[in-house]
Length: 169
Image (cartoon, rainbow, N blue to C red; front, side, top):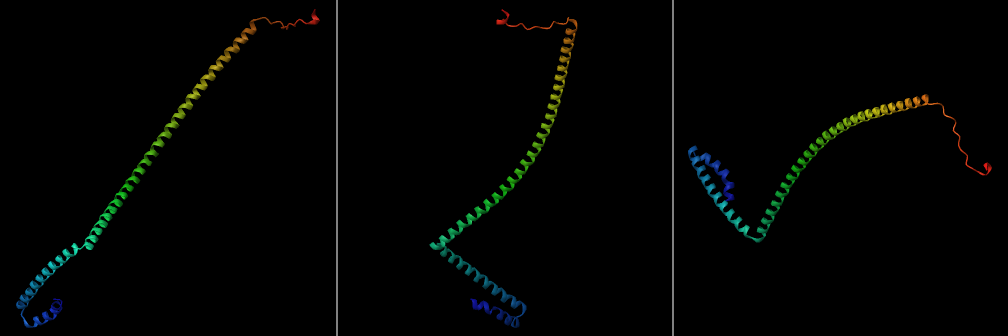
């Protein structure tokens, strides 16, 4: 068969010189039909040979191992894709949480500043009110003391009694 295929180009050159276009076309059709039959026969033989080879224990084990490795590679590929997707999602979620945390902490800081200012104002107002009350009480006490000291006669000096002792007896 291989020899016949190798001789085909030389035969075609000889046929061109001997035959007309129609005769050459018919000859080529015959060769084509013969090649198709030969291909079908070889294909059938190949499938039969493959079937016999697949039945051998060593080949069967090799096929099983290849299928197992293929499944593992598919699983690894799927796991890598899932891990990459999870990484992207985690990163995106982390960035969202960070932005939300920034906004929240900014708002909290503003609230603390506002509350501190309000508290400072309230403390200042309370301190001013307390100072005014103390001032008024002090003014009232001073006025009462002045009034009391002006209207009463001067007091005699106060003598401290001596305890009885041996000298006074």
